[in-house]
Image (cartoon, rainbow, N blue to C red; front, top):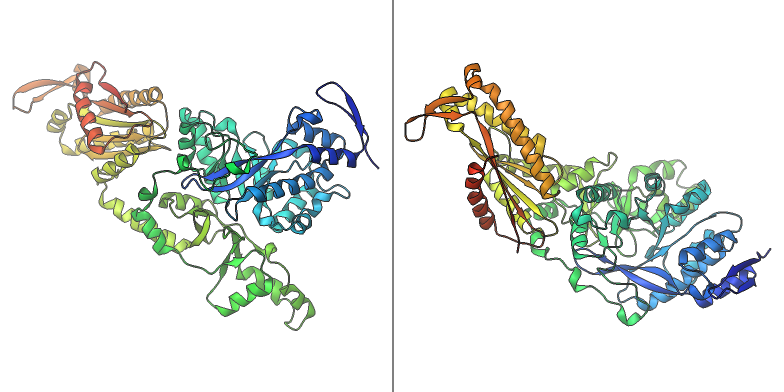
Length: 598
């Protein structure tokens, strides 16, 4: 039965239309613009999001109003498949390179109700000559209250048929973690609320970093949506996002002449930095496991396992050579071997698609550092390893054994450059950290130097074992007050320490340093004899052998902040810190701060 509705357009007129007539009118009026979604590192266009345009003549102020009206008047189920086909036909003309994905916003309200055409999206798309694996259906949490368990079941079926699923505006609502668990999306697009000004807000960056780590553990890619400035772009890249979309990349366009293969200003100067020793070790540890296509049959899969008796798992790839997960031989045994090989049901089973047996697996780019790989693996308890990709394409499989060997080699190297007293990284590691941080320009970086005041007189009076205890005390306080995400603590030697901080504002970090100073001054008094504590000083010989009085020990702190978009050499930073060291000792509060700009 057709639904009759009334809608006011911009000039205040009313019109009446039946469901089919109105769907036709919508399709004859609207068109699509496309906004590119781009790889952070290479600037290559990964896909486009289809955005509805020209809804004004229909009397709507936004595409959301159009979809709300369609849902209220029960023609959304008929409209969405046709909008998808329109977007696909438009996108076909906009593709510069084969394989770029279409990201389509699926409203999904009422999905799965009687005679819902959206249940046949796979057949509809294939009938139009399109491959479901080239389409990402972006879902919003906004209308989850209107969806049911049946809706989730249909979305899972679409995923098994090859469609990609994405969560749009992640972080805006309350139930998205459940959606990640239930639907296993391949893409998570972080809401712009968490990205606007991310370069200035450490909490936002921490949130995005945490989401990116979680997504990678679950085998999903992270899209930074709505990025508008270069500083936001760099901060999102440093937080671990994989893809970027927004005005900083390009505005939506409807003219196919504006389509590009890549965006030069998005390309990052990281190619050489990526060719690290860690990458070489990761490449050496990768197993080149043969992969199977996601549209292969069970029979083809069985043939692979029979041909190689040592094969226990196979990566599954889509038509873009991007991994969809793993299939384990053990999962097939109960299914295939329950009946005899002559059984007719067994023969039919060999012709079934293999999507029911695909298990999620952590995914990481080959350029990831080893510690990131370890966190990714450790967070996925049931995983046999990590699928490694290079520019999103399958590169190999890193088993748990190989990962642990690489990690062990790294830890041995670190142990060789570790202070034996405190266990903190030594001079070599500190220099490497400063060099890397100095070239990371997406945000301000803070380099801190600590030097004890009156340590030598204390050592001469109480002996070296007590001096070592003081050094150990400061090491523990340093890690307690300064350690954490985005920080580095090192021991230069003796009573000299270093700390680097990559996340945080200068004022907030300075306050933490002052708290550390106060804590050390208070705690170190317990190492002095009661009479020395009471009088507030000790008598000892200075460096020239003359007897003098020395105040109780504390520490001086020098802090250099290198502004964002400023790159400096290690030698320049070390020179500035050494110069500031004297200023800190001469100051009233034992603290000196300096900001360096380009």
